Image (cartoon, rainbow, N blue to C red; front, side, top):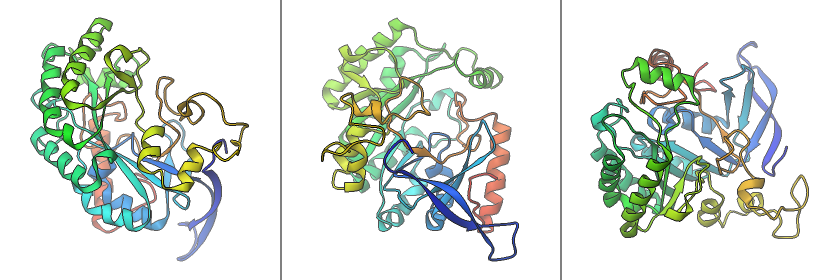
Length: 354
């Protein structure tokens, strides 16, 4: 247990190997902050599953790299961070989450690649803008972050056209949020992304050059003079501060402290030294909290603080062609259909896919 709030607890769960009513006790982690999810769009496709598991008190998470299950208890959870490109189906569940005493906020990825076919299963951008506004009015603009993620270039998509698309969205939604987070597409690092782009007919999609990064950031800074948003670059090693762009924080120390500052348990995780306490590994460091609370499961340039993700790879039916979390459309479709068949019978297993 490296961080406060990451206790291990005995968890009693049903045992399918025993007669009806039989249980077993397993070792579970009990994080304060749960990410739902970087790996798939739970609000869009698995909202009923999430609410069922919330009532059950735990989920089982399986690493895409090894098969051993990890049991995640919600017994200590104070905050859910929801990632979505279409949270509209999930809005109906917010009362249930609030009645359980949980905090939450949304990272809403609102891109405009409608004409390019890069995000084939999303509603039109106009509909997603309306959902953004509706969600902001429901939960407050401080708890809704706009992500344009990733930024993509191709033979048909230039820096200028990207900025034009972002301008159209930003002019509509900037009164309904306070932060914008963006990232530049990373293709070379992920073999399956390269393969999927090629096999699905997008060979010209490419990464930004340094000059194009500067051109984009300068253009975004010009747009932001009328929006007044805080700008962040997600997972970006380049220093973009000259353009008013800060290192990205999606699961953010600063946002959590601002929006959930009245939660003493969360604040004890974020600021354990405020009352002369010590962290589990020694005195409170003087460096940025995003360093000593950094999520070790994310890349070096990521500034997110630690949270436990509960999503599963190869389950997101948006089928975005640049997605690093989907192996193939066929694998995703099979997994989603299997889940849907069980859900149709009212069966929600302890993980999204078994």
